[in-house]
Image (cartoon, rainbow, N blue to C red; front, side, top):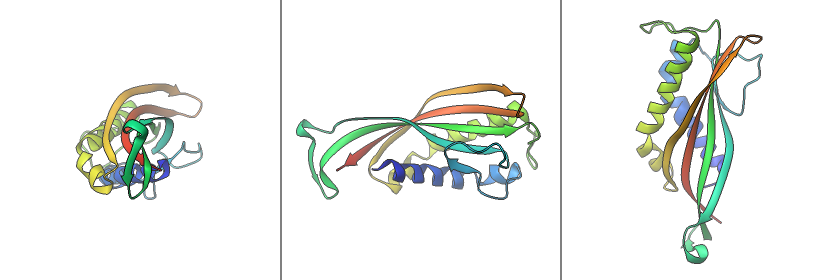
Length: 163
């Protein structure tokens, strides 16, 4: 599976799985994108960024005789998912009302739960996706100048790639 195709699947799962959260935080347009958001965009925002990708042969000589090609590799692709919350963002229609670090952590927990519960969805969208796992989570210090709360979730997607 190509990286671009994998990004599309991850974004699609995030957008459909976080539809209720999108409404609760007052977003009316798309709010989940590949790459970091600009500072003048409407917050909150979620970004997906490729950080690394390592390949290893699927077998001796990596000959797989698949329809997509004859060379097969096992690829571990790592992505950072960043949650960006402006100081003025808060939820509506949820109890309790969340803002600041509480809202940032709530969205992060929803993303982690979504990925862990969507393993069957990933497999249904592509038989080349083997597993999705969270490998880290890190809060970023509050940006006083831009008034932004951030958190980065790191996930690893193990998938097949045929050439």
